[in-house]
Image (cartoon, rainbow, N blue to C red; front, side, top):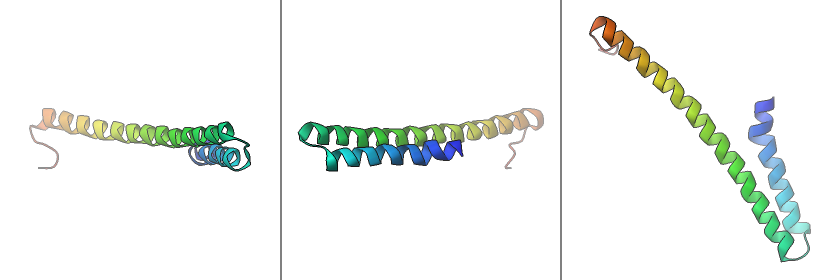
Length: 80
């Protein structure tokens, strides 16, 4: 549940706040702040994606290491 909140609800709430600033804000400063807040929501989404990619790459490295250990023991690559 916490992961869902960070990945989905947090960026959605930040985006909603930015849209509210753009629509309800008076003057260019409030609208500019709304655009900046939406930019922050995009950054939160991007950071989440980069972290997920990093975790997935760790699994690839573990499989590669296991294949190398198998090769060291048997002299054959596991897929041969």
